[in-house]
Length: 524
Image 1 (spheres, rainbow, N blue to C red):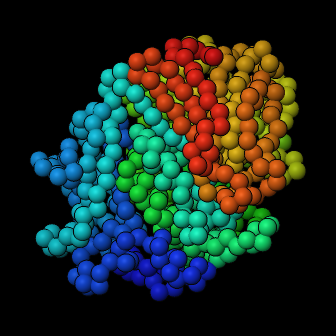
Image 2: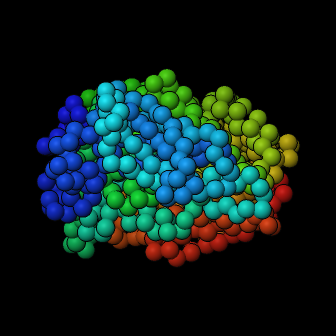
Image 3: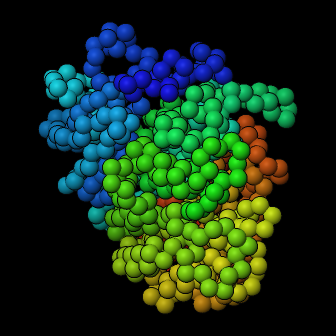
């Protein structure tokens, strides 16, 4: 293992794929700290801080220590931390890979919260490390306050990792400067099945260099390897700065485990000694819960990824898990499919919570698109659509039930956001174009990747009548981030009019497509 008992880097953890000087640029500050501090024996938090699932009155704060420590969080209205409130968090240790989360409650709505995390020696609370600071905005409790958030997905995919020559994951710095209220990561936060090589020669002869680690030299199978895959991204300074300023709402998808995995699958992949996808998924989910602050997912006692995050009177975000409860990938021609892609229990939850929601906008955060035909091999399909433009079959039956419910219960303001396909596009679904007609029109927007290979656009399935007014994708598979732009989406909700504006952006900030949606409608 690369890690010693103290939870820091072992001597072999940073491999020689990138030049030593360049790799050092991406290392957390802890590892370039003065020797005197390292010798002091005080806990350090060099992996930064992050917040998650922030509402009008609550939020979760995350940290990772370099050794066993007590987590202490202080919050205040100003950076001076006058009149700070102190929250005593857990003791973090080896059982949770030295990560910890502290829940904050009773926060003021619509305010900038400054926080700092102290790590204290559990046996001597006077011995604390250097505080690590961050900030976030709580959700508003009044409708007239604007809301802005971003979304995207797919990080460190297809072997395109942290490239010091490009400044690392520089898209995170661009997103940070947009100053959003939160970031929705639509899955594929890691590529557990995608090792990071030291260098890749591009078609034009240029060389892409990666910062590499021992855990990312192979596919992730053990818990330690999954933890190392999540830790890899935190080597990037852009991501750590982003995390310290922007709360996240995180979901997961296939590459947290293995490409196109489903429950009960036995992998046909010679790189793996552990072939049982369920075993791998359980290990990944534990690491996922250790490395992201998620309200419904507790590493010590299980839990679930799907949830609704309330962001004031203007917005509810319905975070789906289209991976953990699905049936096996297949040609998708079943005429009766109760399990589908969500599972029966999650579908009941989603219908119930959508009907209960009083938010102006209900964003459905889907980790896979609805009407894009995503194949798994020659005959099977990975997402909802299966290429047959006729009446719903297979997993489409479950989506038809959901869309019918939204129409008949008159659920207003639904918008679908997703990633997964490694390009950006906008789809409008309408019954007059569809084989299945018992639904109201809606929009689906696709963004990503953040730092992964780009792929050509896939076909549309006509079952729910999609039209595609915009798409931007490369013309060949697995183009590197040095060859084609990376993408993120932006949503602005105006507190006065209630209008929701979606902008599809590419790396560099350029707006590629924009759409304004009006509030209070069942479909549009």
